Structures are given as C-alpha cells and as structure tokens.
Image (cartoon, rainbow, N blue to C red):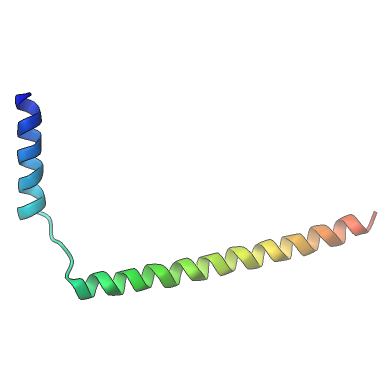
Length: 63
C-alpha cells in the first residue's frame, strides 16, 4: 500500500511541477493543425480508394 501512495504522490508532483503545459493559444493552434492534417489525410485516402475502385472495376469489366 505504501508503494501505491508513493506512486500517486510522485505522479502528482511531476504533473504539477515538472511537466510544461501548453498555453491555451498554443493548444488551439496545435488542434487546428491536427484537424487540417487529418482532413487532408482523409481526402488523400478517399482519392486513392476511388482510383483503385475505378481501376478494379475497369479490370473486371475486361472479362
């Protein structure tokens, strides 16, 4: 039980005094960057899916 108390106390101390938390503006800009990158990635995957779908449809229609 003593180990658990020690772990919780050390974890709390580290989170409060050793971790550098981002400012609200930094957090906003990072969130926007992640959102835009995710949308671009999703569009690229969607485009690749459409190209492969068209290629396979063309291939299967050849037989």
